[in-house]
Amino acid sequence: MNHDLIVIGAGPAGYVAAIRAAQLGLNVACIEKEEKLGGTCLRVGCIPSKALLQSSHKFEETQKHLEKHGIEVSQVKLNLKKMMDRKEKVVSELATGISGLLKKNKITAYQGTGQITAKNKITLHTSQGEKQLTAKHILIATGSVPTSIPGVEIDGQGVGTSTQALSYDKVPDHLVVIGAGVIGLELGCVWARLGAKVTVLEYADRILPGMDAEIAKEALKLFKRQGLTFKLGTKVTSAKKAKNGKCLIQYQGAPPIQADKVLVAVGRKANTQSLGLESVGIELGPRGIIPVDDRYQTKVQGIYAVGDVIDGPMLAHKAEEEAVACVNMIAGKYGHVNYDAIPGVTYTNPEIASVGQTEEQLKEAAVKYKKGTFPFLANGRAKANGDTQGKVKILADEKTDRILGVHIIGPHAGDLLTQAVAAIEFGASAEDIAMLCHAHPSLSEALKEAAMDVAGQAIHK
Image 1 (cartoon, rainbow, N blue to C red):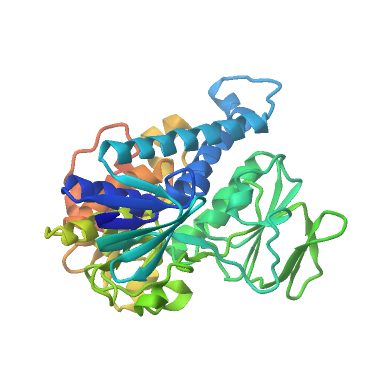
Image 2 (cartoon, rainbow, N blue to C red):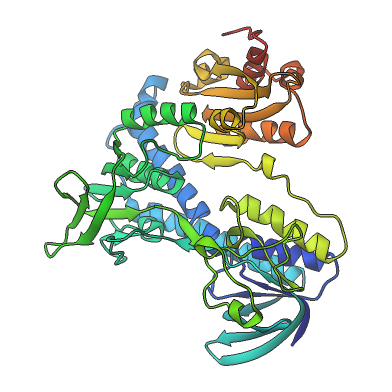
């Protein structure tokens, strides 16, 4: 079977690339090994975790916070099976939707694994046997997989990854999370809300490595208030399931601790094994990364890669933008991704959202900047909602006032950040945001006030 483009992987990068290519008139095929489309993000990542975050937030809010609104609820019960069933329904409906989009765009979908055997050739391995495919262009979008650390024995039962932590059949009495990044904190919060004791072990001396330190410090304080226990600067040397069914976790300088479940969330690596890249002379970089040029092409003409398999943050929306840009260029059109305007969001409560550079990065680069902040405690809508945790922080160039970074911890931070992403994309200044008329009362006014504070002119601070 011959195609103009074959995409290997049907996650956010893969299916978006396939649809965009079909829109541009190409004959497209998409290979996915799983029965459900959508990749890790949809099946065992972004979507199911957000479903559980939302459900667990509602449970905790009903149990602990509705009374202050004058709503009295008694005998609040957790039906974990129903919560999990809802999560699976969300995943299934979205996966079915993607399948429908591929059919609508006349994309040939193959279930199996694709192995590159030559510059324009792929061997498709399926349960029914092998099939030979050819294409003018091949796009690798196989995503990433969880990584581990020496001494940690992932068995998928007691010691597992996010995949298992999304589907526990009961609330563990004690959950140990190894890693205080986005995945570890989001799922740690889910199970803490549902009643688990949660202990987070982190090798670094802070949580959320890479995020603005001031925002991360405030987040740590708020997570501790929610009942999570943190042991920072902690090197885990072993974690395994013991004979009594419990898990034993050993870290340097302390006796082992015991837990019912262990979630290993120490990062992810590119899923680039078994693709046959060596057969065409493509050598992998650190963590299995595929080197590409500014057109997302590998050293082999006609073979491209986007998303988690190439360098940069492992984010679904970054992968989608690269997919569209790459396919546009394959079709002879313009494609571009502004990596200074890629947002990052942690969907805890409060949410934590960031775009652009941190204070630490600006200091390291010796860039002179101005800073403006505004607390949600002084925002009328946040006060009315009874959700006043956190603040907005804006960093702007000292001379030009151009926005260099925006960092938010607070209610609906991920949605609020979009205005900041647009500002950075179009080269806006802090004054530009300060002069925009924001609806009152709205949470977005906190962004306006932070922008005004860059010039020392905040009204309500």
